Image 1 (cartoon, rainbow, N blue to C red):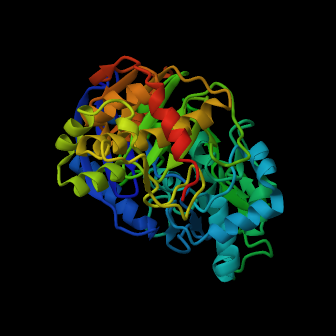
Image 2 (image 1 turned 45 degrees about the horizontal axis):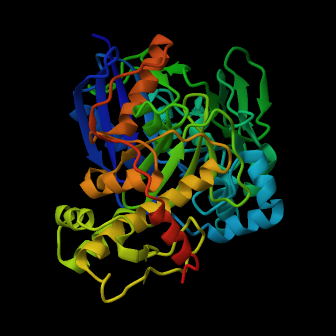
Image 3 (image 1 turned 45 degrees about the vertical axis):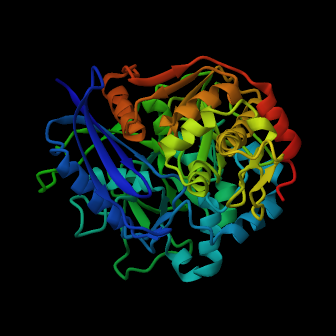
Length: 516
């Protein structure tokens, strides 16, 4: 049996799945927690990865591995391969003003045209601008910039700070994939290339792509040249030269891999020669794990909500509502995020004094449209549409319509209508939508599945709960090992036929339009 491993290094934890490369059958697994916070030392991720791999029985018998990870986080390293400051994660909003500055300088339409996205505080470029302005001494030390999964891939191959890794700080061995790179706001998924002008605009210093086989060498006095980057020497010759800029990871193709180049002393570690695939951003890895193809839409309902679809063509939305990300298969993954998702149901269940199952029973006892009751679910403001100061509102209450059943149903309908508005934003850009894959904590609610088939008007498939980011990374590892994308079977919890009920969205659109 050939084994491959997939990793999900998320904001909260690290999960490792070791699976049969031929069938996708889970063989063993492990996990470890990450620290809380929006600014985290990457070394904590490395310790958690080691702990999770060890809990999964180690990698000695694994032939390939890939890492899926939280997107957008800024990992800045100096010439000695040391992390300069705690990584700023996707949910760190201190760079909101920097995002506005970059848009004012470049223009939203131009950003969308060149990168497929319009900067928001989540994206890496805005964090680099914040670093430039808020911590100029740290910014001057930057020799490489990586994303969380890039840094973990680098460490897993044996690279890292001198004295803390078998091979030391070879910055030119950094690699990434197109899906994660497309969330930086200085990479074009459409062309597959970095936009170096946008990177330099963000940090104020030029960049270049990592060149394998070249090694950084500090001068005897330890001083850096004026551009802040170290001298280097060609690993195959004695000729020395200077970096032309800060190192950005080389972008691997979907089926491409690089080897583990080191021998580790730890028992959990991979053996030398183990293939390490490109890895991916978390949403792109989830799409692989769900085997999403063209026409498939993934709707994830957790603390926040996401809607993303596999598209054969790149998209660009100057409004910024749709992020035109690349995916991990060679296609594209336009995505919309909403702030209000499962917590809408939690709030109304708490108001009604019921648990989630009871809320679902109440909702299913009401008719589609909830007797005219509409919940605009902007409890925490909203990102899509961009209404950060909005609040939630109930409309259409009469003596007859104010029932527990209608309130429960209005909560489910309002949450799903917000996500359906996100899907509309995606399909308006020409992205096909033929079916819904419903995942996340709220997907197991009987009411959510049934009402989703009515609100989206498309067939709904609800997979069994699973670690789909880690599974997608394992798909990528198997793809890199065999040269063919596997199509492993996915266990299904429920399938519901399309049951369009236009009244739900019509009354939502008529009532919930102001955000006030």
